[in-house]
Length: 357
Image 1: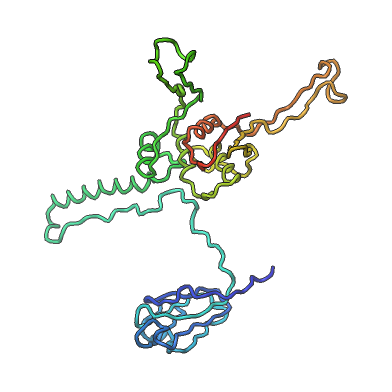
Image 2: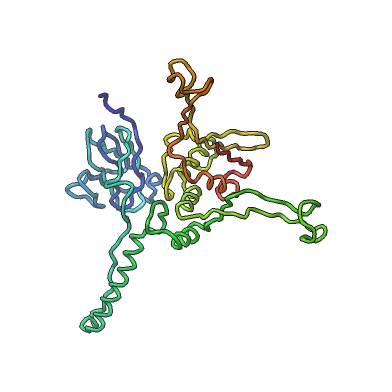
């Protein structure tokens, strides 16, 4: 395997604020410089700095660090794998330098990721009595009881993970409504299950004596979906997920649709492919979203030579196989209702038509 290419990198920081780590190994080498002019050091008068390769550097000379005078260079050792710590008598002292090393790779966080449990502090800092009162048994009992109840609240808030909506069994029902509105400003919507509307007011559109003369009325949908927690979480994730960015494109739209249809309880779903969704553009900025339930159709048998037994199919009869996308989401109709009613965030410059076939 070829060795990783070496590149020149700047220091991690060029300003000293106490014992400051300015470089990490492994490295091929490097150079630190304490500027000569006080203006370059960011100080009124020039001063010395100290470099320590064994641990946090002291602001004065010690057996483990080495002074670097104004204008002097310090060469970092070849093959050094530790941390380079620098300090100076004054905070804000500026230095310069370079490091020669391979491009730093991504370091995965320790432990399981994403975390399966709370990552915040779960232990309360207990309250305590002042020394002059700590011999009172009643006061001690009161403080113990107070700390016990306070710990219950801290534990609940740490483990329930209120901001986490997706696949969080602790946040559901009325609590989900409270979190969605209190943290994110979303109310549980109402989705029409049919899109039949009727405008009445002209002759032959209503029964006589049911409307006043010249009165007009718009009758909207009369049936609505029950927006359960699963559907509500899908709607929330559509709005809250930032992974796709805010730049509208066909890929952006198709991935969001697939995530909505396959992400149970607001999960990320399976966006490996988006064959089930077709997006085309029509006249007048119309966006046609076609949700394909049939992936392809193939001939299985029929009145074709070598395709089946004779006398089992009528002349020109053909048996076909329909291969469906797996699985067809139960929320296809709900998605259509959410788009048409404007519940899902989409660019306002377009009009959207959802076709299910």
